[in-house]
Length: 192
Ligand SMILES: [Zn+2]
Image (cartoon, rainbow, N blue to C red; front, side, top):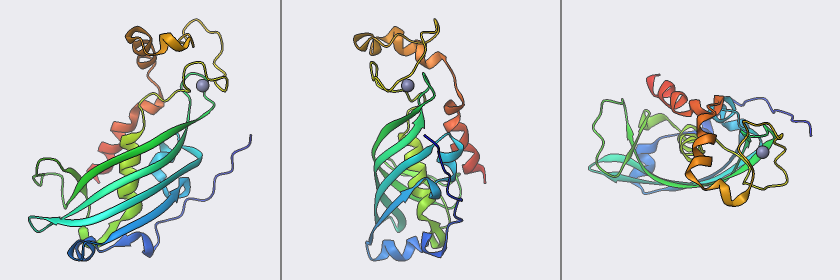
């Protein structure tokens, strides 16, 4: 199957919102995004077929801008056993508080998101939650006939009942792959 990448779109004006204004009127915004809007998911190995529905509920906490973010959809990522595309369900909710810089204190129960609230990129906020939802070592489910892992000795055996055993899990996690740099990507982004 050939993969065609659409050109990454630079976030247009519609992506940038005044989150303070939305918070003041408790607005709810919905977005349906795919790989074209997710530069960092692409950088992390994300593949075409990635589609995310997001719902963002803006609010205020102590006069500060908050967003209840829910992301729901599927991320296509390379299986770390067979390197073929593998659909990973994304279903994540987080309470986010918008901070202007990462030194700002974050009240308990909130995840910080560094942005200027007057010019907040919805795609960037949604993408951060998608990145956090992705497994560090995505693989096809054990026994999935779509998984084309070879019978290499170092590959974890695909016996379903073995997959959840700690030993098998550890073996998978030891195989550090480019996908394991998600944290690094998140940190890099926060340094900007
Ligand atoms: Zn696989």
